[in-house]
Length: 110
Figure 1 (spheres, rainbow, N blue to C red):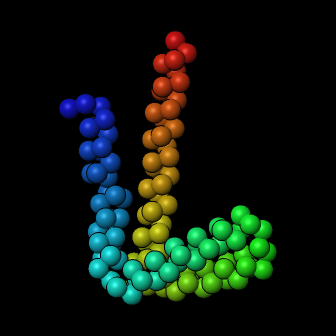
Figure 2 (cartoon, rainbow, N blue to C red; figure 1 turned 180 degrees about the vertical axis):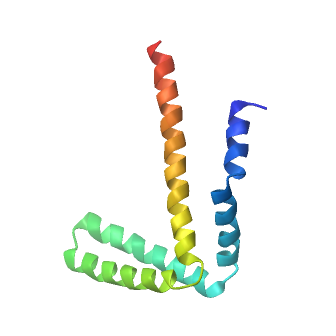
């Protein structure tokens, strides 16, 4: 088994990843949550676009819509845990990326 395969296996067997996938499956099967998440993503895109073109009033409006919908989503059971796990996973993946990058840079320095 290659080092890459070992790393992938280790990530797949991580308790945080396993719990995240279980919650994600539940969320994906819940039509109301799924719909609200899609709405949230659409508002987020509009918010980013408004920021890029400097539409201050539109940014404020989209931000208010985003925040309100985010609050609604967070109120669903399991969503706060899901979002916390998502943040933990992102941190873990960033750490792995940093370790790999540092290792590659050290290899080139030698």
